[in-house]
Amino acid sequence: MEVLRPDWVFTAAGLRRDVAVCVDGDRIVGLLPAERQPDDVVRLPGRVLVPSLVNAHSHAFQRAFRGHVQWSEGDDDFWTWRKAMYGVANSLDPDGIEAISRLAFLEMAESGIGHVGEFHYLHHRPGGGRYDDPDELARRVICAALDVGIRITLLRVVYGRHSPGRPLERDQARFGDRDPVEALAAAERLAAHPDPRVTAGIAPHSVRAVPPEWLGELAQWDGVVHAHVAEQPAEVAGCFAEHGCSPLQAFGNAGLVGPGFSAVHLTHPSQGDLPYLRAAEGNVVACPTTEMDLGDGFLPVEARDLHVALGSDSHAAIDLLWEARTLELHARAMAGRRNVLSPPGERHGLAERLLRAATIDGSRSLGVDSEGIKVGAPADLCAIDLRRVAAVGMPALEAVVFAANPDWVSDVWVAGKRIVEEGRHPGRERIIREARAHLLR
Ligand SMILES: [Zn+2]
Image 1: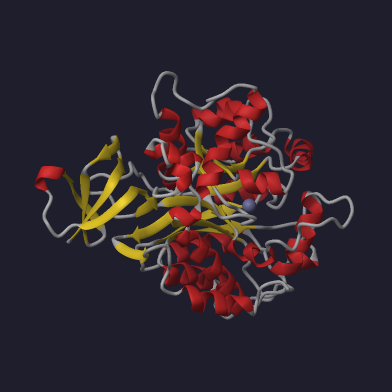
Image 2 (image 1 turned 45 degrees about the vertical axis):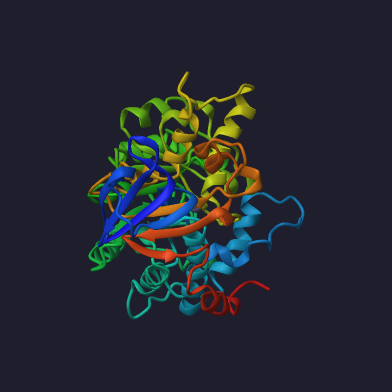
């Protein structure tokens, strides 16, 4: 058993001082007050211990071209970015996909993330030919996550066409399924992975990429469902033309929207979408840094009282605490007032709320019922070092949410195993070396 003794612990009941966290195997087995702590504790001075962060929306391979789409080719928007992304998606072989994924997961681990929801749509060879193992690329990505030591929910994407009335184009052939049965069978095989750190869900890519007649069949999936929803106005307009309703409503009409459903982005919801998702107890996954990077827009202020998880999506940046504070800061910029998401009159309530978005709301979106740090919970922990000039004089939780960056993360545990120590993952040099050969130059 290991007894961790930071200066602060963000427990399921709020921030506590002078508490030690006892870890045995993969579980938290005790929270000990100062007078009951043994002598041989692992001291973590200046650190606040929080649940490890949850990145609910990732396309790991997109880490390959970070920084290479930050200059103009003329009239740049989401669709021109997508063209560049397709070029990368079709250039990577299985070794490249695994190496780049491992690099992305390394960066996630060192920034405090212990669980990723990987929205995975690279299934086949470029051109669409199947690998001998049809799940080859998904297994490579899972392997990368397990090598780094983080949990992964493989959200097996379902992709059937270019757009309404148009079949897959050549640069999308790698993503395509013949029918929903092929996709569901793959998700079921992946869900049977023997490692308890691996789970699976299905991800109808978007109403644009999934034929209407497939959606109803996908509703037989019993588990987590993620979909890109209303990311771009053109997608919403296309959905009204084809389905006569909004993208969220189209998923709902097919029976896909419930507590296990996550609407990724929802930057352009239609009238009625928000009350509908609220009543269905579904989730939103906001990805503010990517939504800024791609010019997607903002999650409306009124949507921010839903269950909101966070994702780093295209990995323009991997910094879940930045995503968390941006959820509030965008709301301030849009609403023209301060502390928009703060429970009124609740001291530290806003920082708690935003930290929960980066942790337990992310878990909920990935199908895990988490309350955070408590006895019996998985030992998924992240220590953040507040011994920084920028944190001087700040309350601990506000320092974590409004000032910290990935360099402040000192240690990360997943299922009781310390995968990052003193800010470094032991595989860092090897993982970077192997990824370099596949990064865009
Ligand atoms: Zn995405």
